[in-house]
Length: 346
Ligand code: ATP
Ligand code: MG
Image (cartoon, rainbow, N blue to C red; front, side):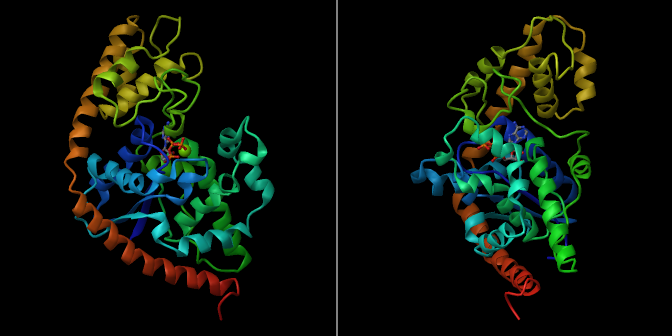
């Protein structure tokens, strides 16, 4: 286990969306296809982070295993020994590390996290969990416990990644050690995942807002779930909010709806955004453009859902359990070293 680590997680609070697929799953699959011999892959479900906002706990256990299937359906090959697939809560050292990190984190620092501000906006203080507030600390522990170098996440997680680097450097400096491996900085992460800038797929109905699985109930037509009926998803694209400018342009500020559809198209057909721009820029027929995107979304979902239904659950379960068995050991040893430097152990 001396290879550099690529780490990626998707919470199991709800069913993943096309935003999760494009921002998180596609990069992991491409990296696997390119680098499986060179890197270790840690793919996991942050199940403890899945109820920082209220959920139905009856579904949590099954959703956690279910959400791991989304990686496999996309093309993760569970037969590779250096691919680990696991559940956050099955590695107990993680929680202790997060509690330790809490004491090296500033209250002001957490208060500045935009995800916390967005997710707590308009809510009564008493109904906002402290877990939502400390979310970035648990995420930092997820990364630093294993010493992951690359974390291909969507642009919404940029600030949390920066916090992870900060807390790693802070603890290393404070104790004059290099025990915590500092992950690469944001721009290098983006480049490594094959992009020029971070990805943020927007709601089809409110293209100023991120497409999020937890927003599905409020914005069903703006959110494409990976389990949507392909024909339903087709309709969502056809009725996506655009603009009255009437000419196709890649312009996130003035034409966020059209720009979002261009990003979706480029990612689904695996072409650089420049190519999509060359083909569509200047055209006036929005309906023809939407049809091209809607077709790709429908084809993608049909194939993806077939793959999802073909996953052998017992093979996957065996993989999960063996990954957890091996990682528990690595994690416990790393935690012990951290306990030693901060004086909890001799
Ligand atoms: P929630 O609303 O519950 O936070 P989410 O859709 O943001 O759901 P997460 O589980 O928080 O999903 O995030 C999983 C991964 O998907 C992260 O890497 C995140 O950056 C990425 N991701 C989520 N939404 C998008 C999006 N709209 N565009 C690109 N990447 C995204
Ligand atoms: Mg999120």
